[in-house]
Length: 387
Image 1 (cartoon, helix red, strand yellow):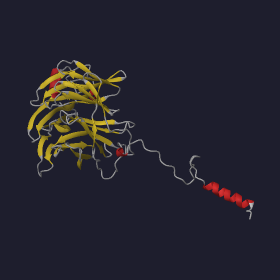
Image 2 (cartoon, helix red, strand yellow; image 1 turned 90 degrees about the vertical axis):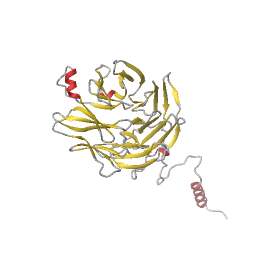
Image 3 (cartoon, helix red, strand yellow; image 1 turned 135 degrees about the vertical axis):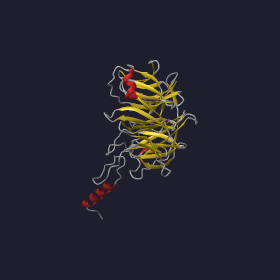
């Protein structure tokens, strides 16, 4: 029996519609959701959840220095995706062999803070390995070490990490107007500055007391070895800095330096309105006081002034990167590049160390034997300079 022509045509049409489309290119149907493009960021670098503020487990990467010259080598930071514009947040030597660097991707979240940050621990002594760990949505402004722990500070939170294996331990709130060293806290109040051990009740010790002439605590710094602290003093008349106090971690007063009188005595500008930035030396033996036009170096044991330098090579506090003994580490623009150099406070002479396309943050090791430097806006490689 012959099928009608219309029946045959209908059968052929249905068969054609059911044919697989491979080989002809898949065409999306109107209700089909297109697949998302694969992310260029590795899964292990995905931003952690906003809630919980937990840190990811650390991973280990090799350190492979690439020689650039007789005294300089470069290390590409393994484990960082190359298509992300990493920015340096902070850099710190823990001892003569270990360095912590915190970098963040260059993207910004809706709150204006970074989406994720990476804390990197480099240990040249332990088999040339580095650890990397992911921090939450933070901007780390400094790193401290105490009691075999590392403390990462952002504006609101302190993240505690083991200094041995880089494992996460705990978080704590960061108090405004305070300087922490592990469980020790320097905190300014209406009467001055107090020192407190947060693990001991009623352990508050008044280490600096305000009076009718001035107030303390606009800047508070712990020494690199954590044995002493520095507190700046402000004059009540114009609120500019005019001195600093040094004490021990036990709360003992050691000495105080009044800078303003020495400025009017040994320089031509007797009416100098003094505002300064203090720095501990990398070895903790000296203190640098820097203003817009001069550098002063003091003994951290006695408060005696050791050096005073006015130099055209130095013209901005922002140029200072670190300080060791009588050597000040500077980074200055040089044409279209940036030059990192050492300035000798005793002689005023400088030594060029490194030239980069962007400014760097550089730190001298506690023993003064080498310098590490990381470009601020291209923080995917580290320079190691042997002195």
